[in-house]
Picture 1: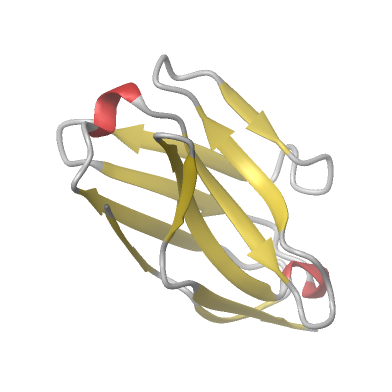
Picture 2 (picture 1 turned 60 degrees about the vertical axis):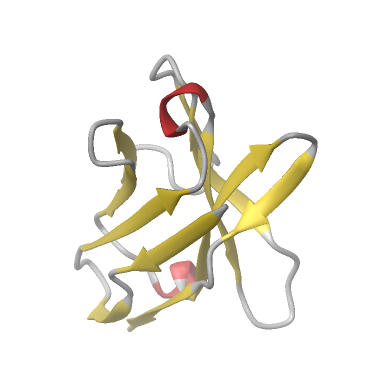
Amino acid sequence: VQLQASGGGLVQAGGSLRLSCAASGIRFSIYSMGWYRQAPGKQRELVAQVTSGGTTNYADSVMGRFTISRDNARRIVNLQMTSLKPEDTAVYYCNVPYRGRDFWGQGTLVTVSS
């Protein structure tokens, strides 16, 4: 299983970024996919999930600002982030729970300046 994340960067508060995660080594369409983040000195937390059927779930802190989506044909999960805040600064990881294990991408840094 390989997850390759991209799209992080530096953005001003109020701006937008789009993260993408390309998956390989799994039958992508039948698995839930998620985005997590870890800020300095904090635990990794769930940001958003999308099930195989397209049902989405968001952390309260990003509800209404972030949108998770999946493209099964391209085996990609995206996270569209808008109205970014300095507290969104973190390393963002894509995730797939697969055969009883969690697999993680390499992480992509999002920095939001005030």
